[in-house]
Image (cartoon, rainbow, N blue to C red; front, side, top):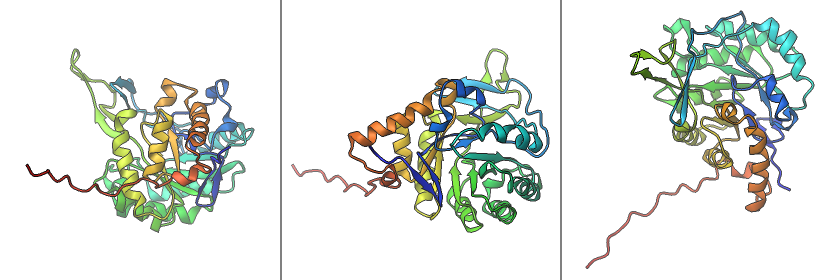
Length: 312
C-alpha cells in the first residue's frame, strides 16, 4: 500500500487532501469521515462579527462559480469556544483560516489563537483587502505581503500558511517575500476577480457586483502559478483551484504542490474529498508509486526539440 503522507515544513499530514476555507462545514460529517482528511481548514473568520456582502452572493457559470460572500464571521471568541471544541473530536489537524484589515490586526488575531489547544496551524488569508493600501489585497504586492507576514510570524509560534491571491502581476515575488518573512507554506491560491451580468435585467449577477471566480475553469492558471513558484521557493506549496478529480490532484503535485485544497467541487459533490483520497491510493498502486510525496515537482518539463522539416 502506498504512503500518502506529506510533510509541510515539519507539519505531517496523513494525505495531501484538505478543504479550501469557506467550502467546508460540519454538515459534511454526515457524508464523509473527517478523520480521513489530511487536515481540516475551517471557514475564514475575523476578530469581530461580520455580516458579509449583500445577496445574491453566488452564481453558477459554465465550468465555474462566481461568489462574493464577504467573509461573514461570528468572531474569534465564537471560534475558540464553539468551533475548535467541535473539531477536537477528529484526528485530522485543525487549520484556522483568519482575515483582518491591517497587519497589526492580523498579528493580534494570530496571537489570540497561539495558545488555543486544538489549533494545529494558522492559514492567513492575505487575499483580503488591506485598508492601509486603499483596499488592495495584501498579497497583490510584495512589500505589503512582507509587512503582514512579518507581523504574523512575530505573533505566533504555530505553523503559518499564507494564502495568496492570483490577482497579482508577480506571484513569484509575492510568494518569495512570504517565505523570507517566515511563512511555513504558501497556499496558491484564492479566487480570480470576475464579474457576470444578467442580460435580461442588465444588472450584475452578484450583489457585490464583482466576486471571486473558482472551479475547473481557473485550474490552468493556478497550475501555472504553482509551477512558477516551485522553481523559486524552498517552502512547501499548497495548490488550490479547480480540483475535481484525482488527475487534477496529481497535476498539482507534479507542478510543485506538496498538498492541495478542494473548494468548489465540495458544493457539487460533497463526498469528493473522500473519493479523492481513495482514488489517490489506486493511482499510486497502478503506477507503482510507493510515496505520493515523490510526485511533488516531478514534472518532465524539458523543452521539446524544435521540429525541423524534412527536405524534399
